[in-house]
Length: 420
Image (tube, rainbow, N blue to C red; front, side, top):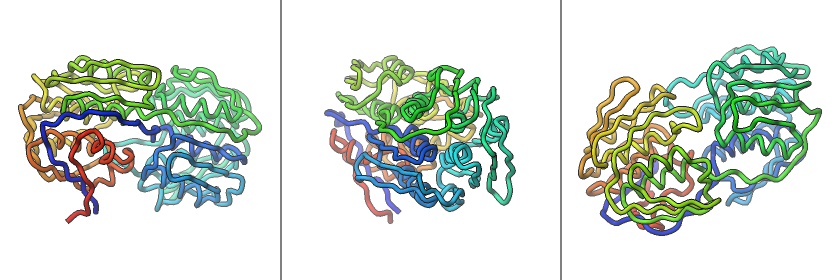
């Protein structure tokens, strides 16, 4: 098992970094290839573990996939011959549920194993199922599989009880081939949802309301292939900016999407960072210890849950005390004991954590528990005395492309080694 070894120092991060495409946009867009028998040409795709898993999942169903190993993937689902998403692949990645809607819409049947992924709390798929049932699908759950059938889905009005990103994406894809108009109320507004919508529109779908809580989708008989570039990863960009806040220095993030990061950039400005943005770049300067900032996670456009752990790490060495309230996932504080092992002063009760900034962290052997927790431990290690060893970095590889190389190129002392 691989580890990251990080030698902390007072050396600031300085230089340029290129932000990868967003995993949370790439995965649903890859699944959208199931809606057409023509090829979907994707660029700016991050080469991540979850992307590789999605490729294997689609190939297992009969899709033909070509990739350059850098950032481009071509997917053709003309000859799909297996309508099952099997447990062995789905258990490692919750996003596998995203094949359910498009497969059912195009082929009239689907069997998808109940999904797995990070252990950060309950993430039920009941709204996916209820939405598809409202569109006329016959669905049951047997032996750990969601089994769905429909002659042709029918447009409907569906109000989601809670905001769900993957639920919105699944139902939007299904509605793209449904008979009539579908109206999704209380839809997710995340940029990754809009990126999927833009790709579907290029494929011939008729969708209005992207970026708002109400989506209208007029179903088509058929969609075609297209070319689409995946939006930049706002969470990767935010993670590196938190690393900059902790180490101080200057960074230029290229291929970024600052228009998707208002809540994060506002909090970093509050922490004392000087930020300048262009259409696809972010220039950031941090020359002093950050100020502690309070965080309350909520659906977009509010502060993202996927940045909570990284801001907690920053607050660990900030001036003052802060409170962090996690409103999305009930188990997303599992990084707290690991940060405390490094000398942080964090207490939590329920969904609220109190962080008192300390002058210095200490290197330690810590264990990653989920994707974003992994990132928080890595950036904490950058400023900790001595060596920090992060175990179970397979979580990290699900969402960060070559993180040790990117950080190493701007001054971090970090390397990947085989675990002992």
